[in-house]
Image 1 (cartoon, rainbow, N blue to C red):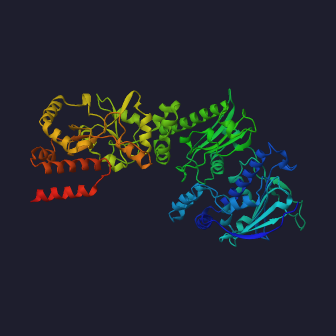
Image 2: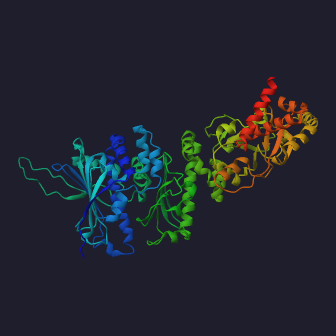
Image 3: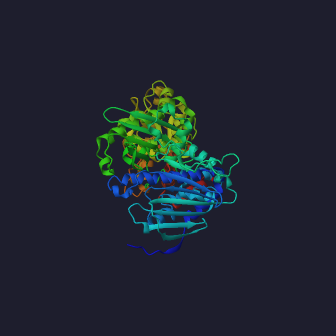
Length: 636
């Protein structure tokens, strides 16, 4: 069978053109990473073929020894990376080289600032990959053939990175991929064997297949002839880093392996390396990145764990190995107890996977506990990057609920800072004598939480309140109802009862003052009608005239707004309207004899309380009109 050779010129996807421009101009100080990225791709290609060959050994075409070869030619000014991995078909070249086949591309590009130093970090998080070749090359030729296809199905891709590429069908006798970089004029350093070997040793020593280069024998003294013919030799150790003893692995090696598996070029924040023996045997090497990936909240995000079985790569992004709230964890897990032909479907119902997952989660949480205890500043950095994701765990992982609760951090009135630094244990240590609850307030922003009128009595009495403004906090609170036996209580729900923290004389005085407003309460309730479930005199306000309170057990107003904004049809609960009998406006209300003015002032106080809660007015124009009329009447 023959395939008609045809050549076509195609345009890059718009995002690729932007990416190429950014890399060439932002990564000038990290040029050498092009070799790491291309070798990493070649290694992945070998891993994928090894896995596919488990079910179809004809794919290896009689050549089951995988290798990567790096060559350079000073006269032609080229560097070549050659592998005998799975290769690509013509369509796969278009999909994987002509486009960026990764979710969140538009979001990534919109997050770039134009600051080259900062953007370099973001590009590293996104994954540089094949396009890193253009950091040092003004022309790149990729020749490939997919395993299982005939020699006539070879594909050649050529581009100078300027917006277009040519694609041509060619003969290629061997499977795999060859990438030839035609170096720019000022990149002579990469035409030296020692420099290339140095980069391979630095970045790619952990690659599990041999990375080979030709030896460079020197001529004998006084003779132009070489002492020996060049021979291929392995430059890397070609052994799986995770199977080596921890004491034999340097921090630099751990860091470079992380960059390989995570496609990041910042060092990780932390790692844990463990070999587990027992009912199930496996090795895990897990990392916490230094920064949250830009697509952490993408619904189509990829998980970060690679699964191996007896050192044979099985799959990327094995979501069954790590719960969703730890989706930022990167690394590898190598099992001795799974079949080599394991599929994602088998993983979903496998006892060994359940055990590996539970053990791996335990190791990650223990690592975080140690960081929180021994290096609080580093943990604060971690929490800033990943805290919102960790909060999801309280509703997902009931088995580790207590451990997770201890790892939580919040803003609070103790510092009034937006930084989430207060742990529940810290709060418990600062609780006043006789305090029965851990108090919190939820709002749609930190400013709204910090300035909530519900905090007034708590600030007056020096009672700490947690300030919760992340959307996930409402989800968190549905699962976290107490900490070490102390209930968590919202300051915006139910009647206020501070128990032993209230002064008896003060309480009696408030009750007597409240009775004097019984008539006002009834008139306000009549005025507001169906808008409220109840009206009562409040004891929680000191400077605001009124506030809205939800009944104990009802959904919070903030959660109701979140669900409605997500498109859910939620029946609104009527709030309780509490008035402050000591506030001048409420006293004025008590003395108001004109029914129309009474109704207007009552409605203005209700609308103000709703706005203070972060709610929206059904009729803003009427609110403005009433307010203006009241202001004019007060000035006349």
